[in-house]
Length: 209
Ligand code: GLN
Image (cartoon, rainbow, N blue to C red; front, side):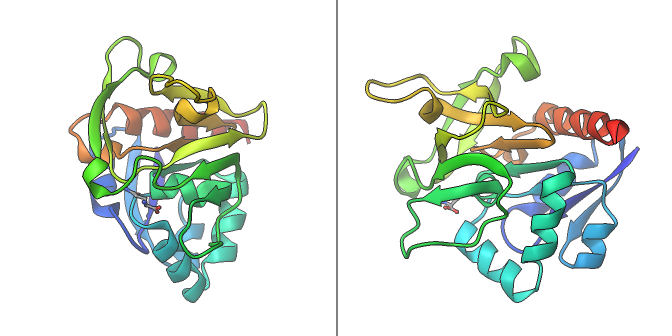
């Protein structure tokens, strides 16, 4: 059994914690706000929210460097704004650059689908992770992957490819070694299969270390 941390500086962290309480292999799910709490968890979820705010709060709380070090090695799942934070590069920020945790070898495009009004829900096929039964994916001012920089990054979920789009631009769920990222909000549904997937992935990774 493992202890899962959910970064609780900003955003939808409570919902993740509730989901994790339904996963049998999770001993404890704790909100993470300090370096001490971060050091006590086996793996981490970075929730959705607003990545500029999350980066600023992380900086102010002296959590930027500890988080950067953590995500280099330990299993981490970023959802929506969390996916942006995990990336090595992000584009589309209104006022220039923002701090990131610099781990996932992709370029993320923020707010790809436009404003809040363009938020949507769709049945997403994630065959490598969940077999035949689609996942009800909620996209809220979601990012997409604009560019994949390493062959180690595997696309495990994609939207339909539109005219003029590259394959990377359809990617809304990727795995790279110990990292998992989804552009949508799996904690806002009743379906805990992706939380189960992440916990299984984390356990496998921790056993190998
Ligand atoms: N648009 C937000 C950002 O750029 C992400 C939205 C979300 O997490 N639902 O950080």
